[in-house]
Structures are given as structure tokens and as C-alpha cells.
Length: 461
Ligand code: SF4
Image (cartoon, rainbow, N blue to C red; front, side):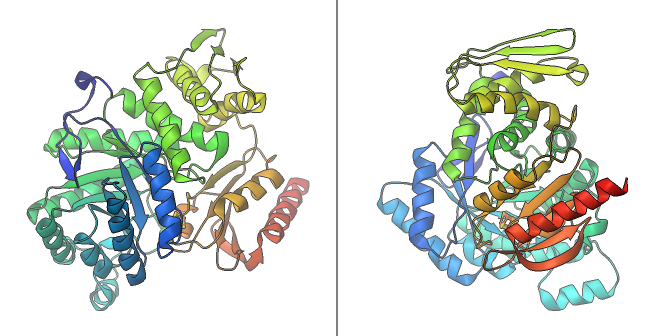
């Protein structure tokens, strides 16, 4: 763990039997990517992530069948000796949240889609033409949940994402750090008024710099208001491979170094245990022990990093850490990394290039973001994303977002030039600048369509 004097003094919140915040170590967490109703598949991912060192596992609960499956998974894990807390991820459904309050150790709700009251009142509220929920109505809506969570000792994370804020029209939403902070504070205030304090807060963005900005602002605000709730840190939809890891590292390492992270989640479109492995490496480089043995020097705006690791995740964490220690990093023109022990030298090259791109210094290729996948998609997101990355890699300045479902997809991809949302049966909808241009086509057709538009745009310039 990071030395205590370097950590913010947050409130200790019990998540089942594993407390977070206070004097506790920075906790590592991940989320399953299976259909929760598939108990065996979800159990397998839970066990693998727990064996890799996860402190908490989050599981999405989109329907009543998933509530039942969650309970079975919890009991089976306990039967096998795994007592780690399980977190339920809930969108929109108040009824499911109340049910899960008695089963899960923590609920993650998104203020953007949870604050709206159940259907009939929601219609009344919308009729009034307001896109923000009036605080009185919000308190009324949250009261039963706060009561249920209090009764069962269940914590709540207010998990805000820049891509989904409390507005009815996601395409005209405000994404600023300040907006996200204000939204979170509004919910904190109401839950406190309801006598509920077992809270954790996160403000995520797919852009690492904007993630750190929003989290720092939240930290400052909580310092002023005395609301010292634990902070959950992570860059959302960072994608996969080297670029996903670099993006996560750029967003998480600064906050770990500033001591304002109480728990971290690396969000990758890969298996949960891989998220945990990389999260552990981020912690290792921040506490400067483990096997990190790198040197970083800077001359004439050139950064040279020498690493002796043979582990790709360690290399990426070290390289980002080396970059972040530079006071004038935005003036860097080139990064050279030497890692003679690395079997895959492509990772070494890509790490240098991705740091330049993800830190907004130089565009080196298409920027991809993708959701980490959860129970709400039936598509193999990793396979789909790898296909897009292979076929559409060379369009510097172009942003492509690949999302697993319609629940969060449209909002989360709103800043991208092209968006792809998995529908059912391995089909996708394709969006250009937020407008749907083709529905239910296969991945390869979507790639051809986007490529044609890119070529047309290029020749029209
Ligand atoms: S976009 Fe949908 S499938 Fe992807 S992580 Fe978010 S809720 Fe899950």
C-alpha cells in the first residue's frame, strides 16, 4: 500500500467484510463480463479475478433473473471459501436495487439514470419540461433505497460517467468536470439528509486527463464540505491492449501518487483478471517497489526510458510513470523505450506511441475506446474490438467508440466521430457524429461502411 501520510484522510466504509478508505490499503476491483444469469461462467470469472488479487467483484444486475443468479453466485463462492464482497451494478431499475440491497455488499448506481423516479412519476416530471430532477422528487425517489441499504448495511457507490449525465437528451449533455461534481454532490447531500453515509464516489471519463481533473475537483470539494467519502478511480472505456492500459495508467497513476484513490478499477475490454493484474502493476510503480527497475531521463525534449522488466504490464506502468514524472511533459517530442528483456518488442514501440497519443501530444493512429463489456451485451466485445482495431488502425485524428449495449452506449460514445453499438446476434448499429446511419449489420460490414466514409471524406478535402 501507499504510505499512509500520502493518502487522503477518507471515511472508512465497510463493503461487506473488506473496508475501504480510512487507513485501509487501496483496494483493487473488477467486474464480470458474462451474462450474470449464466452462473457457471460468472463464477469462473469471479474465481479467476479473486485468485488474481481482486478485493471486490462487481456484477451487473439488469433483471430479476440476475438477482437470483447473483445470490447463487454469492453462496457458491462462500461455499468454496471466497468471502470477498460482491457489488451489484444497477441502471434505471429501482426495484432491482431494493432487492439487491439485501444480497449484495455494495450497489453501484449511476446518478444519471437512477435518480429519475419510477415510470408514472417520471412522466409527470418530464411533462414539466425539466431535464434535471427536482431535489424534492429526487429525495423521495432515493429514500426507499437508502432505507433498504441502511437496514442491510449495504454501501452505495454514486458512479457518475461523463458520457451519461442527468439529462434526458444525452447528445446535448454537459460533460464538464464541474458538472459531474455538482451532480455527485447533489446526490451526496440528499443521501446524507436521509441519514445515509456508507457512500463511495466515482467520476469517470474515457479521457484520462478529464478523469483526473474531475476526481481532483471532487476531492477538493469534499475537503471544503467535509464529505470525506472514499474515491473510486478509473478511466472508463479505455479499451484493450497497450492503448487501453496506457489510457488507464495516465488517468490512475496521478491520483494514486496524490493519495486520493481509495479503490481502483482498470476498465479493459479483456478478462477481469487482466484488469486486476494491470491494476496491481500501477500500485507497484506508485509505491516504487516490486520489480520496477526503470530509469527515465529527458534531454532536448526527448524522453528515454530503460526498463529491465520482461512483463508487458510492468513496462507500460513504468513508462507512464516515467513520463508523468517530467515537469514539462507536454513539450516532449519523442519517447524512446529500451526494454531488452521484453520478448514482444512491438509492445515496447506501441507503448511509446500510445503515451504520445493518449497524453494528447501527437496523433499516431485511430483512437479507439470500447466498453469493458458486462451482462448487458451478448457480443464478444474483445473479438469485435480487435477486428476494428486491425482493420481501421491508420486514421490519426479519428475517434471510434465500440460499445456493448444500448443502455450506456449512445451516451458514452457521444464524443466520438464514429460509434458502433452491439445489438443482438453479433450485429451492430453504426453512428456517425452521434447519428445512427446503419442498423443491424455485421462487424465486417460496419468496418467497410466506416472505411468508405473515411476515404470519401479524405478525397473531398
Ligand atoms: S456499454 Fe453496455 S455492455 Fe458495455 S459495459 Fe456499459 S452497460 Fe455493459
